[in-house]
Length: 132
Image (cartoon, rainbow, N blue to C red; front, side, top):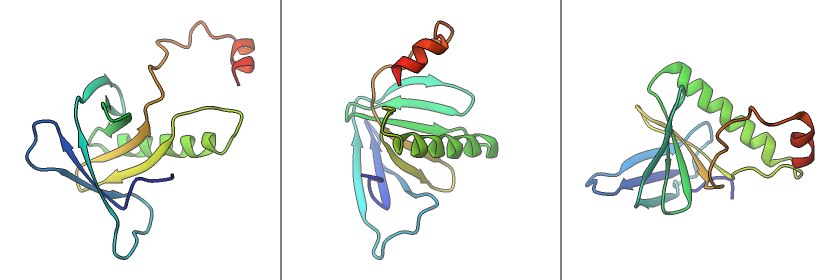
């Protein structure tokens, strides 16, 4: 599955109005497919230079870009990396379901692949090579 739907309506726990996003950089179907995603148990994982990362109880990771052009550019680049890595059968990465956007928000939707490592400092070239 490459994307969830053309239009994604995300209803956060406790919210009355859904966040409505459309697929970014991909022509929409006619009529566009719509998916309602109710996000329960949204847990903030991290906030970084690109944006905020949330883990849902639905098994998804939502990466919201900060509302700057640079953050949007970086999140788009990150999605391209996921596409390349998913094409490489020797590397296991989270499944990307695509970028979704509206006038204010850009969100990368990923499968939840578990907890990220805390640091790359202890990795050697040998350990990286054998993990692939």
